Image (cartoon, rainbow, N blue to C red; front, side, top):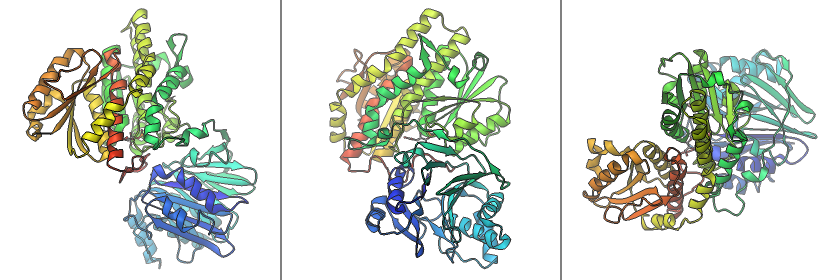
Length: 610
Ligand code: F6R
């Protein structure tokens, strides 16, 4: 949440900052601002709303003179989205200028302390407290920027990534972080800072990952790093291999539809990375047979990644016969969880920065429980803190609503289920090979669904006025409903609920009335007829029913006004196919309604606050 960029070099900073922010806009887009240091000192320009307004206001950044600057795109936490609350923030005398991502939890107490020392505040933000606290320490101890920032870090509670400019240090940008992402990039005679790699990829591939409670000073001559005790530390640069075009929209209208269509590749690349010679090989992740011999699995994650966990609970228990619990990371971290002996905690996260999932990993580690992360972003906090990390190979995901990362996470989970089954003796060699070839068929089957999208477009066009949708199914079908329902809600703002089909009549069926849309998923053989009966029940109460099932199993027109089919696959892997029609319906519904598909209201990708 919130995107930060910074540049110091010989080129004009404004256009570079705005270009970087445009690649981080998925992190927050309710306001934006840049501060550039020129001959006249620091000049700050901000605007409420999308970045395009700031681009217009600054003539693409060219109206600001100077070769050093910092920028920010905001997802509001403290204070409404307006120009005053937008970053960068400056101390009253412009001694210190800051952009910040994260939440300063003890900002009220610190604000009082500063007010008692004569500081006045113009905004409602916690960031202004950071600016003034750094200014206060800088002036009180007169020991320079690193000392002032280190003192701020000692007092701050919460998460932050900050980039700071000091009036007296014209040739430097200082940065620090705790629990919010931040990377530093270097090139000849210049240095960059950003919340995420795509923001600087067109300038450099040489990056440093700043660890928690570390600081850095960026100058044109290079970057120095410090620990929280203000001591210089050495860091190794990493060469990023990410494909720069992956973060471009190319000919597609939106990132979401591009990423939906990238799913076959994301799944295939992930599969190929961990399957060699007909066997799953997690040795790259240092996942050992001993790890896999665990007796219990706890999957923890948020949002769509949590829905992956729900699917995997069914898949792992059915294939490997190892008991699985799935916990929302935001609940898990505070519930004083009772860990069974021999538990493996699996944390799933696209960004690798989700605050609650990161906290869940720490909670498990604090109890001496082994952690395995399934993460898409190299160098991210969860990837670095978990004991083992398996990377999904989905490439950068820019649309706020996840699609290809979800699909890649499922595949890692299937491979994990197979490995657990092998180690626990739950499958023989023949069944292992058969199941693996079923997983290998997922990319082509997703591609087959994507080759004809007309029914989903038509459905969206015909239902543009619908306002309540229920998605029902049992087992893995229900898990797929959960993800489909979230997708529709977040990009089209249509109210939907995913319901376990058998649970509907315990209350919620009272909401069904003439015309209510009910999408029923029926791929699980043991419960197909039961879900079909539940659809009959809602149909007889006036619902308009749509079915999703395997080819050859379509519901008759006496129950469903439409029935979408997906290619046949081992039913335990059905979620990978079922989610695709639901993603497409959500996307086309959003387009029909003229909404901002890639940046839905109130949302941001990478939720780094709790
Ligand atoms: C929904 C969506 C979110 C994320 C959730 C976790 O489309 O993208 O629900 O799945 O915020 O994010 P990660 O996977 O980055 O931990």
